[in-house]
Image (cartoon, rainbow, N blue to C red):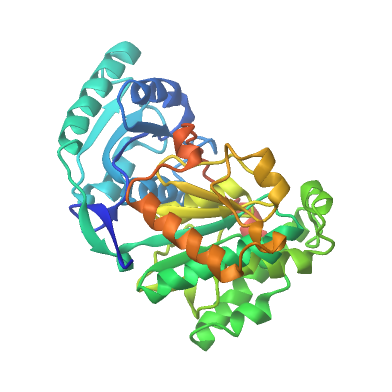
Length: 391
């Protein structure tokens, strides 16, 4: 199995879904944007809740989401007096060649007229997108994001290493894998750095993780902090959690760190495994990996998770047989068979890989079937970063 069926975009990307994305650059216009999207099949609305500012990190996240290959067309739906305008987003999206429309409520006749225009614009895009047909592409065109949330003792023993097997297999096929959450890597810098393809990449790995540790300490959060769910799930130390978390990235060499700052938002520039400078919060972590180009997500959870994503299918995996029994409506893969002795690690890893290919070919994940479209953008404080000496 070395190919999948997807949709080629004008900029050369290959999508596995045909979403129409409605972007409200400010939450003030999100409710009408959401209602517009709800009236057209295949459309989804997103926004950010970090204030009225033209922050480059926010721009990068919203533009990156629009540029993701899973997005077939874009409607920018602004209010009109916001700092982060439709025009700013248009500047970053225009060269994709995708159909893009812009509506501004204060300039286009108010809410009702603007919503009518929005629905008509999306309807036209939906008809155009409906004519697209899937074509065969090599797996090297895929970028996978790997994430963990609600970890327990089974995550590092079963679910994460099984996802790592699938990640290795995709990289062997010429694909790309991204994993983030630097605070979930604290204490493992030396292990990850040994896998770096160069001294400069190793230096970046140390820098990324140590910066995140400083941020936590500055907020008064012990870098050894674990959530109540982690502790109740049987994890005893942050080292134990981190050693388990990094296993979802597999065993391949690390090609680089994808920095996410006001000055740069890095994308993978060649196949292989990458770390992304991001957050430890599940949904925004996924959002930013998808903004960096990931078309599909593998999300492990020992305690259980319901999350999906606005434009990328999320395959959820648990290593806990009890969790799978309790949340079978949400979890796609039961990796608890490893701990039950019914299946080997490699067998479950292959099963995850084949499920991923099936999803890229159109199979709906359980989160997609339930209509879950999670989307959260995270940002950082410039003042705090300056005080910490990070910029």
